Image (cartoon, rainbow, N blue to C red):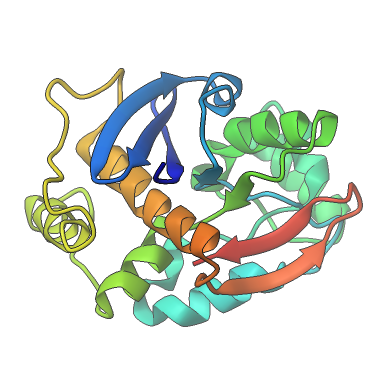
Length: 221
């Protein structure tokens, strides 16, 4: 039996998963717990796992930004765990600064709910199948070059062409699953590519620390 590789990316209203078995892809949406319930050998998800407590930067984020060079802004520095309790961006910034770190951007604030969702699940029930990935890092390793912005037509087509070097029959699903956008679906497949590398023992690991809750702070590429 070929490995069952699940790549997961956040999307409006929840998550989108690309489950790759051999050269076939099936699409799934829902909350993260429902995707964890799928029969998969690895779950490669684009979300920070393992959070700092104070001003320190995760080595994984520093190394991922270095890998991407001019595109490094797509990797945000993960704020301290205390910000997960914030109801507003202003409160998140106050909590972050109180912990000795910096302010929290609006873009970072809007993904904190997904960070908190995964953090709570993995602290309650650690799942060794789950690894943190970053699709832009995955695509850079797969293709070796920077790609156009992912929400442009050129960026979508470039990503689809590149991912077809791994899955020749890949096509965007029609209709799109749930509220996922085309770039969310392609990011999920990029995550799955890294998940396949992880299972094969050929993936790189950026960073590799452990946070105060025992979660690994690393990005697999």
